[in-house]
Image 1 (cartoon, protein in one colour):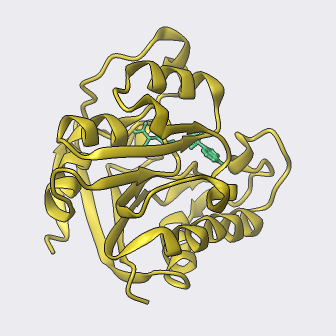
Image 2: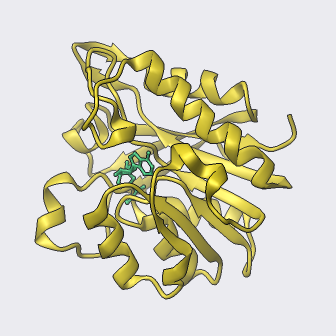
Image 3: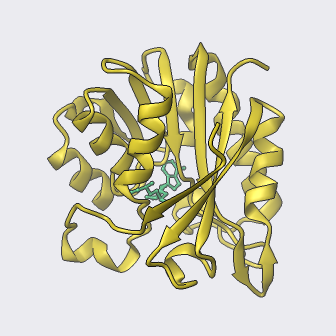
Length: 218
Ligand SMILES: C[S@@+](CC[C@H](N)C(=O)[O-])C[C@H]1O[C@@H](n2cnc3c(N)ncnc32)[C@H](O)[C@@H]1O
């Protein structure tokens, strides 16, 4: 596994104005990298935190079959309107993943909503309900616990996450890695150096992020 890659921090797709203020997409090139590595045409690709749809759009472009869940209605509507496989996108809460009717998954790639340790709103409710950092990590782990039986035995799971500079540093990448390692087998991290990112907001004070790679062999 190549453990350090450098990519341009460029998003090719234009998004509507009402969604631009909270544009936390990863680049299409990141999804292309992992889809080329771990999937083949016709594979089922799942993103439990669809956001603005990068995983699903690139999967479709590369001849994979995308499935996804998104909590936020405006994002859901935007992604659905541009997806060919519209019926594969669910407007819902991934904390209830096991209740959705999904096929066997060949590969999953996602970036969950992030939380700083000092914050008090639960990102898994679009920050509308109170929450603690520990509860957030527990709930995130529970999503992947539900994912595990849906995965093919040889499936890979890639989770993009950063440590966060705020009031000190929230070691989100380490903490998510530890939490998900209780459920899936951790194969290692890929450090992604972002060209054109000058320690800006987009990468939470860093010019790199991590892709944590797991397999379903635990
Ligand atoms: C970091 S963004 C994902 C961005 C995405 N990778 C992209 O490139 O567009 C995380 C997304 O998860 C969604 N989300 C938050 N809680 C959720 C939940 N419980 N179930 C499903 N989606 C959720 C948020 O609304 C947000 O759009």
